[in-house]
Length: 374
Image (cartoon, rainbow, N blue to C red; front, side, top):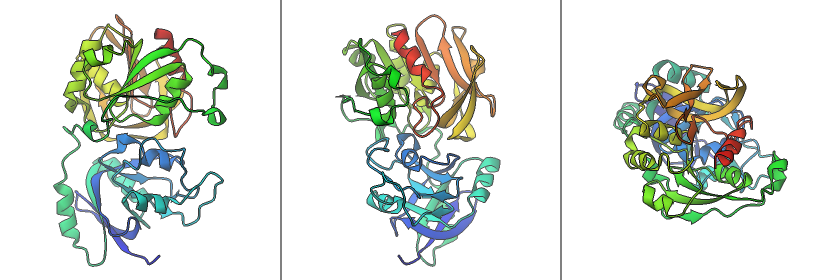
């Protein structure tokens, strides 16, 4: 494949030249963020929480084990673009069906390689996540690309859930995932629970873990009302992850207000933020967010430490929690709120991914707590 020049232009005026990868000649734009995971690039790129974002991987060598049909978290690539130091030209794994390059081409996603991702991450950590454009071709106007990056809508205030939620309710069909099951002793729950999962950009592995823990799951759109959710007569309600600014998801915040006290509620990531907003707390945008598979979190109630998978750019301000809500988990990297629980009704949430994919399994116990609550 002939080498094509690519340019990454940031809103702060920085432009970086590299080589084009993915859909050659395509263009991508969005909020530039970084992920510190060493593996799991396919799960990251297909996670709907990355809608509207261009992902920089800090690990320098990406794509060496290819992609396959099982390790997808949605219908396709959800990230807007990809920045890597090196995209592996060689694929070596018995599960691989094709290369990451061909997967990017298939979904018309552009990217750039041959750049110093350490330098890019230092910029994002010091100045914060920022808007960017990746363009392919010779003689590109760097100043014009920077101006286009500055005209991209800010992530603050954006409700992106309409772009990733399901168009209609559906029943999750249980899969035979026994070959990948890391808690086989939990399999075969006799008394199954009816759960409605509100899809703000739900990952498939969340549905797999709920099913594994004995839940029959009906997935509903992000705009579903409390009466629509209750019409399924669920024993519990799950609030999923998703992209964008949680404060902008006003319909869902009202829905959760209407559900409080009626059914047990469990939320993760965007769902955690929406539950917090529903009880009166506020959220704020983090400087560069938390994205990776190795974030330490302390369970305040037990004192135990979990290594967690995280992907979010907003957080809950714990000082704004009402008297009937307590902080249950804290992120040990920066002391941000990583979990809450209500003291007067069955509802709790965490600011990370207990289903992992990719990441460690330390937090899978939260699904046990949800089923016990039901």
